[in-house]
Length: 153
Length: 153
DNA sequence: ACAATTTTGTTACATATGTGACGATTGATT
DNA sequence: AATCAATCGTCACATATGTAACAAAATTGT
Image (cartoon, rainbow over all chains, first blue to last red; front, side):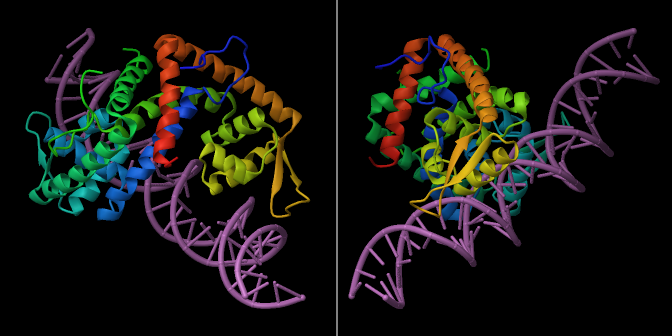
């Protein structure tokens, strides 16, 4: 907490430029985690996210997943197609709204979710331990605040 | 700072999963900033990053930019090509190492850098103000720590 | 001095992504 | 009821990205 982030002179400063620094940190973490879902099953980031959402929250529609995961609708559409082909999820029509489909993990999908999820949790625990629990919790809290501020809530 | 990030039970928890939460926050910020360099000059993220680095640190080689900005070498190569076409930067051979080229902003490039940079700084100041200076500084500090921990330094 | 290895930056190729359009359905307005 | 607008998910298309291979130059080891 040594220096101010805002700048009285109008000079641009990369070191304290939030979009850049956040992206760098986030990409470093994402890349280091990537090998787990990638090497384990050859799954893409979008697929892993959809899997994680369905595993965590139960049956949802594509739009709901997109909103919750901040995933573009075409990314969701493609990930769902791919996960369906693997028989990790199935679609069921919704009688109330025939435009949407309820997406549900199959047994096979659940097994994959539990397996990848537990490795993900292990990764997270290790990282949190290296950072120190307090700092890890701070990051989550600041991520919350950032999203609220950006989305104007 | 209400809850722990690590988990004694092995259940996966998306809410406190650092790769996901960081990526979400970082993407929210990046997207909201994007309209500035995108609408202003139709410049891509990679191009903006290369511009920002050369403007901030002076002449550098492609590899140096890639390392500092965490940009893949093909991204740098393409961004440099595109910025050169716009006449925002020029290349000069390095007599010590004839594999590399010293990249330097042209006068036009400097003007663009100052203009975009000052808008970027304004964006950052506004965001830091909304977050509160203390929290903005915390984010920078935590980004530093994260990168060090991930890269094992 | 030489051969083997590494580094730099570019390219071809395959894959991943965003944009815009679309058909089908639903909700809102009149 | 009929029309209009909005939403859902998919597709074709264009663009962006990563991988692997490469030529040129530098570095290392002998």
